[in-house]
Length: 372
Image (cartoon, rainbow, N blue to C red; front, side):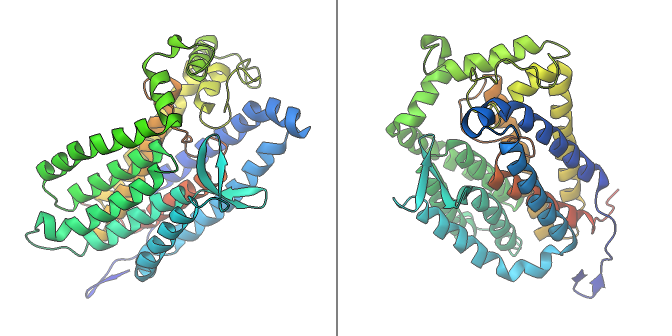
């Protein structure tokens, strides 16, 4: 990589982050097989139906990770605006009846044969890339309206498109991540806080206008008010953790995955980990995500320039925030959002994009500058 007249040589990637992600991926494949088996046997008469697809997506994701780990992020910087525009077009397309597919009450997927692409997953990455590219060009004393206003408008449009699907979890991640990047780029924290306050009633109005999301909020507030209906998933998830205890019932021995807990292999796979692997299993998963956060932010702090710093910080935040929300849903401290646990849950688009993000972060780590 060249910066001005100086050349920064490329070193090894951050192996701690690399192996933490591979460990999470391995745990995920095992747990997807275990948690999806009852559904796979019932609907497809094939116990390997879901895990086979997960392995395919994992292979594609690893290929993408290795590609971006070795392909310098500065080389495709000119293509970032075009990639962002493509993701916006796909976000609009998924809302068009006949193009976007409705699953579980949300129009989030573009059909690709037996597979499906979630444009929101792509938008999470392209938004980070776009903001990192544009904000890195800002220098000197910055005017909030002039220098940050256009990007705030674009973030708002992107967030509203995703919220319209509806996908509250991804919207929260995208907006929160964008605010962090604006702050790191020099935006006034008080202005950002004011915008956050203004956004609350807008999000509230959109959420309350959708029966699907409103019911999830009601269930989160008091799942026992309707234990056989709206509160069923949260209650069954808590039962799974309680059954697992310290050491778990053993891999493959979950009772909750047998049609008691819906989305056992996606939204609530963390609960199945708690039931089958116990407290120590869930602690291991949390610890691995803490390692991802530690290494990701360390890479950002040691990045060679402003662009790669914002890029690594934004991508790391996206992964860690998604993991925190997913685990929060499983233990009942956050409303059901429909987002997956990165590297662990069943889901093609999410897994592919998460591993791609790691590849980009690892590429930045190869140019780390020791600031000690």
